[in-house]
Amino acid sequence: MSIFDSLTCDYPLPDPHHQDLEFVTRDLEKVMGRYTITRDGRLIRHARPSLFGPQPVSDVEWPIQGDIRIYERDPDPEHGTIEYAVRARAGRLDPSGSI
Image 1: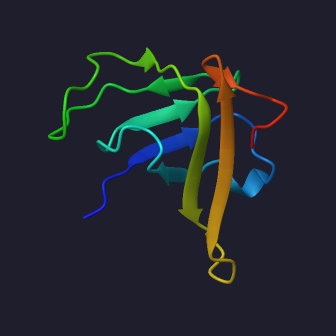
Image 2: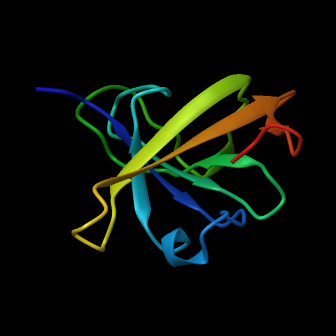
C-alpha cells in the first residue's frame, strides 16, 4: 500500500481546467494529510484526525523548501495523468520556478 497526501491548489495553475482538482503527492509527509497551496503561495496543512501519526489541532502554515510533485487523473479520459512540479523557497512558492 502506498501512502500519500492530498493537496488542493488555490494558486493559479497554467490550465484553468485543473484548478478545482484534488491532487496527490508523495513529497510531503505521506500520512494522508490534507494541504492547500494558497493564492499567495503558502502551503497550509489542515487539521484532520489520522491513524498515521500526530496531526495539527488547527490549520497551520507548513514550511516547505524544494520541489513537490502533484498528480491527478485528467477528467478527460483521453489525456491520462496531470502532473505539476511546485518549487518552494523560504516557505513560499517560487514564482520563477513554480507550476
